[in-house]
Image 1 (tube, helix red, strand yellow):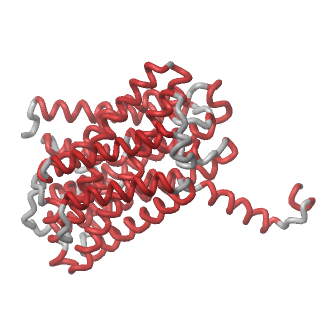
Image 2 (image 1 turned 135 degrees about the horizontal axis):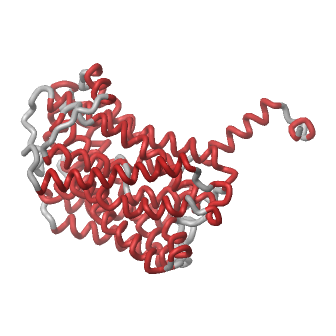
Length: 429
């Protein structure tokens, strides 16, 4: 009834609603794109090179869990206007907030180092020394996050994510993979019993569903000042982010399966030269174009992750102790937020300058394993908070959403125990 009174036609009203939904987009897309960071690309590349198309089913399964975990994180942000650590502090006290935050930071440290390692690996394909790449990456990211504002940072993150997505889509197409086998492996799990297989499964899940991603989506929704009325647009945002995350992950697995696994290309996935060898393996099938796209995609993804993960770490640490957070604040207005963010970046850069690249390749892969092992600790807080009617109001999780959330958490615990069993008892080795 309001539209005629205001002189607006239904078509105009629909356009206004559509524009409003577009304005909400951002947190889910950025979180999704950032999941395909240096560690993610390394893990997907190794998965395709080692096991071909056999791990594509993991991406489909993790996409479902990713959507529901990110959706509940966004709803927490919409309902409370706070980040995860801040809500945990208010609900359960500083000690529990510090415990959850420290758990998250342990996983984040490895991820930040992995981003620097990704920059070094990508630029090494063009002959740039690791010292130069680490210093360059740290400088660019610090300037971006301290000199920008929310809108500029968000638009840049989304633009980089779209660029990375296109790069790996083209790489997969140019590699001429077996699309029929890809489709079959996507829906029919190819299970094995050896420890290396399950280590790669855990790493693949850990690079898709991350502790930092769970905290980031809630903090970013709160930083964007979205509210309960933005639920529909937020769900669309999260759904697109989750879909694109795993779609691009699948393209990377497929490209590497076609270029390395199918033709038995000589790639040592445990070597410091693994990324370079995988990129070179694309040349015979797709020419220099795919090689360059692979390298540029890795570099762009590393910069994206290097911006998002330290940002998330600073969000969580400041929220746990009630300090000012947000990229719209100036440095002098939120010194702890920016100081911690710069500290995380500088510390990781220092590690990269000290540790040989051969060690960093393993760090990039194992950081994703740590993500998966620590994620259930974070999800327990998320699920409990989302069921709190007093806290969530009309956005409280119903039985269906709670059931899916707890089931996903339980599956992650089972996956972690499976990895421990296959590693300790040597099943299938």
